[in-house]
Amino acid sequence: MVISVASRKSKGRALQQFVRDSIIDLLKPYGVVADDVKSTSMGASGEDVQLSPLAKRLLPVSVECKSHKAMAIYTWWTQCLSNTKAGERPLLVIKINQKKPLAVMDYQDYIELERVRLKHDKVP
Image (tube, rainbow, N blue to C red; front, top):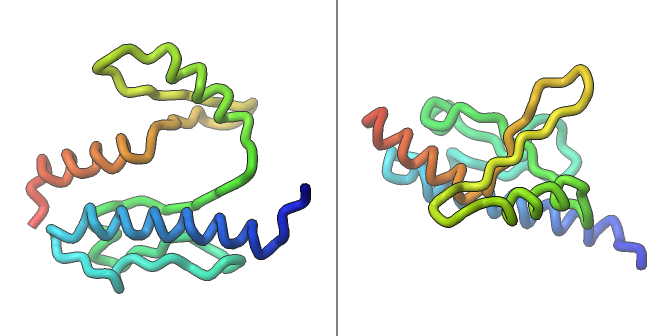
């Protein structure tokens, strides 16, 4: 079955909007409002979720979102999950030749780490 371009873009847009909304929720206690975090239009160049200077100061990240039917990384992630014991957070480290290693983790675990960092840094 072939998925239409519109359907693929819709999946990608939904992921971007989910990320946008979770960042707004994370940063709301620090004065960030909806206009500070924007999901870009599909096909636009640059970051998929744009942060205002205030949001970028609080969360200095560049967000790229990818939503595909299948990615080999999920096979590795499943193995990582099966090896994770109670009380542990899964962390998958991946690397290809001539590239730096990447850390892959559950998105909600990442948001929680940022929440703890923001509280620890006592951001106004």
